[in-house]
Structure formats: structure tokens, C-alpha cells
Image 1 (tube, rainbow, N blue to C red):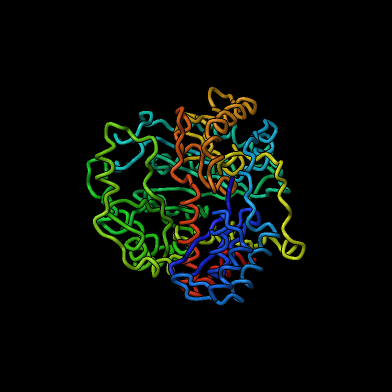
Image 2: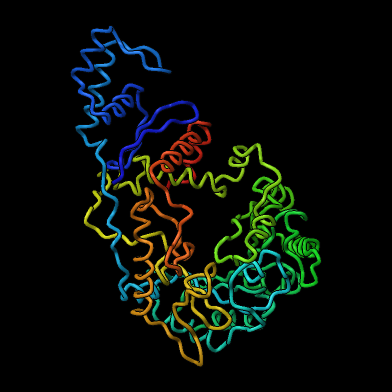
Length: 503
């Protein structure tokens, strides 16, 4: 059961949260007092008589209240109770399953297909997921087979609902994708000359930037959006080294400078940055570097701690996770990075999911939110359904749900001129995952608003874990932290409403 809870913000304001109404309210100290008092089984008529006799109620640290004020606030408490505000609710029914026909439907609406053009990379990043610190298959220099890529694209396009989804993003990944520029050029040419009717193709690429200057003209000519992996300044980027363990920073900066000089418009509109946070950088340092150097804000992610090699875990933690400094101006950084800062994103998510005042559309605003069908079966976790958003094909032809998960979670393959995608087998595999994680999800206060991927929960073992599991105490802390941020700066709050929620 999820119970109504009370929480206090940094400014000592009191709130109540109702899981039944999925809403929090600023409340008077007496209302919270009655809420807590009722749990003890107190008989309110006798309690009010006692207060009347004593001439009032002393409620530390809030002061003294007259019998009339106590009776008035009690009436408000009873009104909220009558309207179900304090009613506990059952956790959602997480017995939903994935049907095979849903997979076929997803394929017809796929948004992005990502090719690992090659396993080869011209860097040897210390924290690479193929380093000694992780459990992963050994990689060599395998490249993606062009005919297999063309067959896969033909299949996706043939099933596509062009009216519903007129655009398809085709992305190139590695290794370092530019190490197989021939494949990239062939695919771009193949799709640009594809017969009608066809989607509008958008090309993107993730790159370490070492070969950027060499192939710059081609990238610009075909408007390929480029996400360059760079961890900030020279020290922040020092884990990203070449094969002979030399720093890569200067070469990448030189290449980026050439892009900016030769094609300033392309640099401004088509180049973005991806940054991994670790022990040698921080949100603050990477913000200052990218803002001052390129007038851009990078997209950050934390270094992955999944599928670690237990033999090297302690070394991994001491090398990549142990911070020596602490940022003291986090709120200023949140104001600068805004929705790119994880704290601001969580703040927006909390307002959307739990305030009770965010409406998905004007129709819901006028007519009210649709009542949730409590008998509906939900699928556990926030895992993307297979092919719903993207699909990743490794250089070996293994089909994965996305580029961020282990190779052990194969959902198909492209091999020997044959594409194998079995919706029944995929649905069975996913439903087995859901069954494993469900007991944990059923105890979580975020079970109906989960954003965690099942593939990040050690689901391949018999004891899955979730670092975002939230019990009642942690849910209260989450509400308190984020509503404290709302109260901290009113103009910041208004900006959040405008940029995160306004249509």
C-alpha cells in the first residue's frame, strides 16, 4: 500500500502528499498534527474538549493556537479526509505483459536505427566498457556488412507507416564510426537515392573527433549531426587516451577549431557534445569549459557501474568514482544548465508526476484528468519496448534494443543474408524479465513513474537490483528535496513552468 505522507521543505514549510489524488498540498501545522495524531488512534471529540479546557494548544515549534483555530483546522482536516485525500492506495498491478503483435507494430513506427560501423577504435579510454573493468565480449576490428545493412533498412522501410512517422533517423556508432567511412558513405548514398515513397532520412553520428577534420567536407555536405565525446578540459578528458596512452585532448580541440573556422554554421547547428562524469571532472567544470570554449552546453552521463568485473571493482571505484573536490554553487549551475542538469530534470519530473497540477493537454485542463483504471495491468519498469524508439545493430550483426546495454541481451540478428526477428521469442524473453523484477517494483513508490531500464538491474541474475528503488522514507526525501528547490527561487520556478511544460 502507498500511504499519504507529510514532508517538510528547507524553508520549514509543511506539505501533505496524497497517493489517492496524486497531489501534494501546502498545509497548516495543525492539519499535519491531526494527520499524525489520527495514526495513534486518538478520539478527536475528547481531544478537542481537553484543548477547550486548557484554553488552547501549544504546538512546538509553531506556537500556540486557540481552541477556535484548532476546531477550524480540524474541520479542514475532516474535509480532506472525506474527499479521500488521506486514503491509501494499492500499488499498481504490474502484471502487464508484452504481446508479440506489439513488436511488429513498433517496427513499423521505429524512430531510429543505429549501426555499429566498426568495432575498431583509435582511442583506448581507461573507462571504456570494453576495458578490464567490465565483463564484455572481446572486440577486434569487425566491420558491419554493407549488404546486411541495406537489407535491414529495406525491411524497416517496407514496414513503415509513412503517414504516421515520415522521418527515420539513421545513426553511425563505433568503435570510432569514422574508421569505417566507406560504410557510412555507402549507406548515405543508398538512402539518398532510395525510391519513393520513402521516409525523410536524418543522419547522426557519435565520434571521438580524432578523424573529424579528415572527413569534414563529407559530413557537412550531407548535414550529418555529430555528437563529439569530450569530457571537458585537458584534465577532465585525461581518461580518453590514444592506443599508446597519449592524451587525445589537443588533437580533438585542434580538429574542432578547424570545423568552427571552416564551417561555423555547421559547428553551431550540427555539432553537440557528450560528456562522461567521473572523478576528474564535474558538472561545474564541464559547464564552464564548454560554455567558455564553444558557447555550448554538453549532455552529461555518469560513468556506468553495470556489468563490472568484480576482480577490478575496488580499483574502478578509487579511480573513477572518488571525488576530491565538491561543487559549492550547485544552484547557480542548475540555473545555467537548466533542463540539462539532472537535478532540474528531477524537479520537473516531480512537479509533473506528483503535484496534481500538470495537465497533458488543454482538454485535460478543462475536463479534468481521466480516472485511472485500477484494474489495468502495467508493465514493470520504464524500459523502452523493443523497437519502440530505436534499435542497435552491432558490427557482428547482433540486434539489441539500444546501444547502451550489454551484448548478452540480443533480440535478433542479421547474418548470412538473413534477418532474424522473432516477435514471439522477444516477447517471451521480455516477459521473463518483467516477472523477475516485478516483486521489487511492487514495493516501490515510483512504480507507476519508473524511468529505469530493466537491463540496468542485473536482470540476467536471479537477484535483480535497482539503484532507484524508492521506499516511503526515500519518497518523502525526494519530495522534500525537489519542493525545496521550487521554493528556493520563484523566478527559477516560473522559468521551469514555461520551458518544461508550456506548449
